[in-house]
Image (cartoon, rainbow, N blue to C red; front, side, top):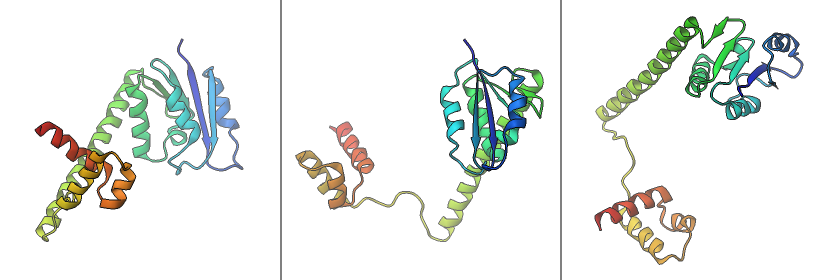
Length: 188
């Protein structure tokens, strides 16, 4: 059975949710999740709960996009998240429904903007690395001290110390240690 979830949010404790709730009631929601929390907060517990409980075929209804996303990027990411789970999204104010041709068009536009933003980030990263190299700086991980790595591997092989203890004694983190242990295993 598919569920319809409503999501309503206001920014402060003194604001009322009534107007949003009246709109969501028109959609016969099985459950309405509400929050009184600033949209600038990246952690919104009820929105996180909604993301966990929705299943393929469910519907999420909001009064407007401004109630769902805290920024254009955040909104695009949320629309993309729900779309990837095959969850229908409806925004009453914008008259947006991901199951209509217009909604699918807007979804495509949202996804194009998200890809554009990712591409810009990659481009800026490459430009930054190129600029740093031109100044003699090298990016990437710092080289691992061979002696300390050998010591960490010996301590690990002895099976007398925890990973935390090995890290404290040698400065070699568990991810680095495991990476080199895997290389050793493959070369055997």
